[in-house]
Length: 173
Image (cartoon, rainbow, N blue to C red; front, side, top):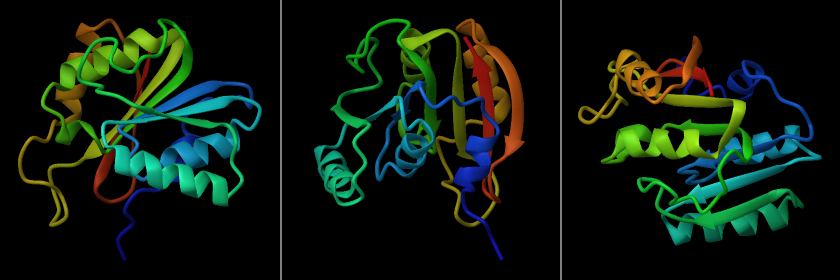
């Protein structure tokens, strides 16, 4: 039996405090943002996406589940400053299963770095280049993500498995 993404296991691999500020870049259905919000119950989570429909659906889900510590932001994360968040603001940024979809991968990682506080954590999860479910084009290997992130001045902390089809990389600003 295949395991797609083990969200709770992924979040167990990062340092979280209930008062932290976090974000999910390219949130889509925001499965990470919702789980993160439950763990940061005294903090705040920002769910960012370029698709209004995804954010609208998320707002309905948040209301239904009575989750009040998530704010949605419609934005373009492939532009520096595109998140609209201030510099050195967040404790954690998650980029789960998104990099393979964007044209300017470097800019998205650079925007994550910009909004992270010194010592903040950046967690990038993306597809392994194997398996029938994996997209066949535009994938970055863990080594390619490490190279971009380290060029931007992020320190690699660890790599771990995130289900049968994804890798996870943790960086510190």
